[in-house]
Image: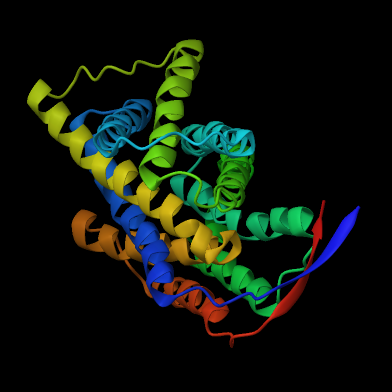
Length: 310
């Protein structure tokens, strides 16, 4: 049975869009910081687990302080728990992609989450993305490929990790689509706590099966605390909170494009912090990504009619 309903689709406010772009920018700074942590003696699983742990503690304390009641809606919990489990696949699959091939290949293929988000939205809403959104996704992917010099390093040996990077992108897109449909049934602290808490449970299980060591043994204890606290706040607490709070306001399609600010910020930060070379290809790629980010938001206000299936 179907019910025709008329909905007024307002363009997301500039502040919400800015916050989603800030999420990507934080992740862009997070990448060079993780590389520095590798040089300090950490492994990727140790950092991811440490970030989930810090996020769980921070959001858990916020939930206890707010003393808010938990939602009773079963649909909300099914969506949130499913999104949390799927979200764990983003770092896990990306870790395997980085182990089997160059980081540039995995990082570029991760940007497939933009068209994947549009595709998943089409299956859920039966609405075809606008021409601007399609062009925007294309610009973002091409820009990422140019900035990472994808074509020059893509060969059979380097593409061994490609399937895992694609799976990471699919998990990222699924997380976007699911969390954008949570509505306002719970505070951002509760939703963020569940996302980080589930990750803190799932990752040790995978670590045990894969034989990964989650306890850092190289750096001194004091450095371990400082590294994990800093990366946890900027890798999980701030971006996850902003995403679950402002993601529903922008929608998953626009939100996924806005967070691609990660690439230009990562390239600039790598050049400043790590001394990586930033050439004309990287600059051209950044400009393409920025154009793709801006394009969907430049559309005029309009109303659309949607069909809601009951």
